[in-house]
Image 1 (spheres, rainbow, N blue to C red):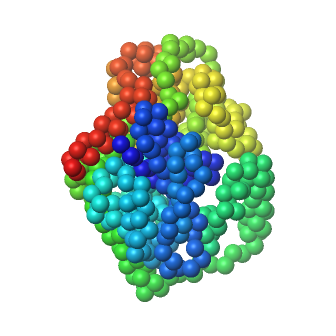
Image 2 (image 1 turned 120 degrees about the vertical axis):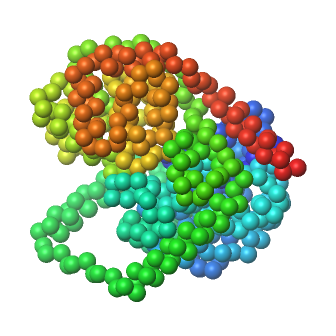
Image 3 (image 1 turned 90 degrees about the vertical axis):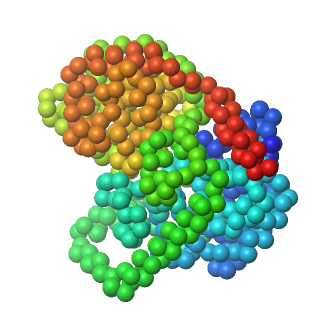
Length: 466
């Protein structure tokens, strides 16, 4: 089988759970004897109407790789400005020639970011099945998070998208992020670290000056501008609906992701298969829960990840007189602004350090505000026998449903998290029972088994298309 994978970039330029999943899957499929190819978006042209072309690039992990010159922009989680920039059409010739040249048996798409509609149209004409993994909600939500004012967004028609996309990158910034200069910057850890911290200092200085002066009022948009914006987002929504209509099979990370996608797109061909990565192994062991309660948080400081919610819950816990605890934050930042004596900050860590990190905590807290399609950290913790306090917004709560004790999932509210932390503090036997339940639950942590299940999906689709 010839398998073509598409994602929005590779390490170190791009990272995160999507990239980790896709790269591991490719490498293991190659290990199992399949012919694997990779396609990613490349540099943007400065000319608006330039058609895409596909070029060979340096192999990634010995996998033949290609990049799209002048793809559609990759907005990541910043959202999209109301413009036709993201829904441009092209003649499709470059995609047709490329697909006829590499002749994939199946295409596995991990994101719609950067891909023209014509890529899917040409694949459909050639009767190549397309598998789409629901890593996030891009395509049914311009910011990919499906979050509006701290709640799961119910705006099916994209009428309020302008509100969420206020921080979307302008065309010049998008061009820069696709450029070779940006790739050099991301590949040089010393340079990127220096720029990151310098930028933080500059921004804090600007903020202090702004607070000391009278800022200009934000200009109110006119009714005509709001209507034009609504029209553009409606057009964007229709653009992605067309693309989803050409997907052969939806690989849902969780039942939560399936429910949300089908609420926007109707009944879809596909099924739920929880994701994994090659670093996960069955390392469950019995743990002791005595003395100081140690909480852990792995992730960034964004609102949608629930960082602020966790900090507020810890403040509440401390204020209630429950002071014998620590919260270990693995956010990749120094967090010098946190002066609380119960906060311990750590830099990011490598996969080889994961066991050491998890061994230092009694319970991992995953307080996501957005309806997270899965949440790999939950699987990582469970594979080491670590109990997890998780918001019901996290798709990976399905793994916790395999516990014989299912009381560590809270309702996603601030009050619910505060009550859960207080309960764990007051009664450590809860964590002991959770640990025992993890040890007893039946779960296949084998990554090889996961890869074979995905290959089985491909083979069934190829058989149907013949």
